[in-house]
Amino acid sequence: MYVIMVYDVAVERVVKILKVGRKYLTWVQNSVLEGDLTRAQFERLKAEVREVIDESEDSVLFYLLRSTDWLERQNLGVRKGEPKWML
Image (spheres, rainbow, N blue to C red):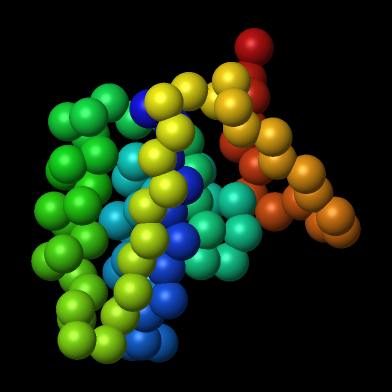
């Protein structure tokens, strides 16, 4: 499945949540990561996020798509954090 993770967390947890997200996804924008995950990887990601956030004040959203077939991403301005492809 294709996962888009968006987070809004307290400043003291920003680096920790980014570090967890980058273990599974590609950082594409401040507070936004995305990528293909298996269901098991997604469940591990959610479990690790739960360990980092304070659910009484932080927010993390996951948008799930079955595939990228229905995804169209349009970009304006600078592209940040694009995956680096190596041949």
